[in-house]
Amino acid sequence: DADVTQTPRNRITKTGKRIMLECSQTKGHDRMYWYRQDPGLGLRLIYYSFDVKDINKGEISDGYSVSRQAQAKFSLSLESAIPNQTALYFCATSGHRTDTQYFGPGTRLTVL
Amino acid sequence: GENVGLHLPTLSVQEGDNSIINCAYSNSASDYFIWYKQESGKGPQFIIDIRSNMDKRQGQRVTVLLNKTVKHLSLQIAATQPGDSAVYFCAENSGGSNYKLTFGKGTLLTVNP
Image 1 (cartoon, each protein chain N blue to C red):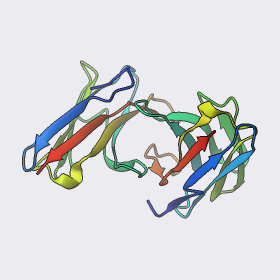
Image 2 (cartoon, helix red, strand yellow; image 1 turned 135 degrees about the vertical axis):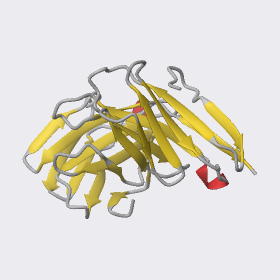
Image 3 (cartoon, rainbow over the protein chains, first blue to last red; image 1 turned 90 degrees about the vertical axis):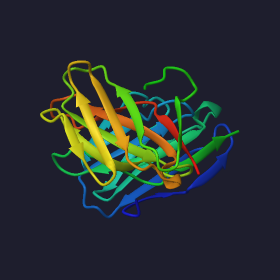
């Protein structure tokens, strides 16, 4: 969905490096989410934010942090990347009082 | 249906046939369900949704059926086309006002020309 963009689309990094993944949306949505997808597994929620001053941990937040810089921007950081953080990362957004989430194109992260 | 291992369930159909993809959910309090399509290298794309006060909803070539008694959800795709080849997964809202979704692991649909 072109309304939700993620950068970079692909990234290869080394163990111990700090990595930031960025998400921007033009949908005007309040709520933003970061998910991780591993082969054969469902999407797992890392962090979510219901507005600029609201940050909540998801089911797998250890090793990650987030920043909601503005309504339209939500970034995910890996402070010290490790190989088992190799995965596809998706950002999603949803509107106020709605459940439907719209996803970005994803970032493929490889940690060597 | 759902898969607890590393390998996705797969469904292979001939072009033009109808496809039925199933999903079992576990939370009887879930009141909203979504089907997503994910093509290789892309993010999940919304297909259709249904609320728990309905048992059927139709879209363009797609129908979602909800059976709350057995906590089962299905996606029917009519006249399946090669462009329908993708991973399909369901998601449920566990109810309340948390607006968080729980996702299934998906089914790989392959359409043979």
